[in-house]
Image 1 (cartoon, rainbow, N blue to C red):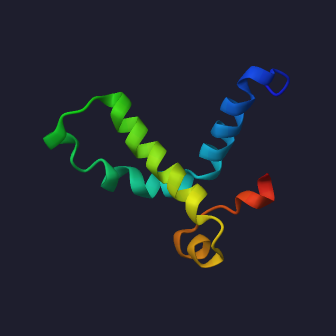
Image 2 (cartoon, helix red, strand yellow):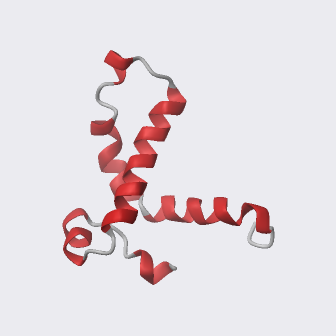
Length: 79
């Protein structure tokens, strides 16, 4: 997969998701708490449950205190 340039962005996103497993694991249930009231499907469930924690990880990984508090990965080490 690393040799194909077209899927390089997808590969980097999957690596980021792999690094953000702790935030995804702890945030996907509370974020999707209203699933029964809003009645959305699996794709929206996955988008909310994975997308928001990944954005959270990217936004807050620059701050050392937030990384320590929420156990976020240090993305600069991997990048």
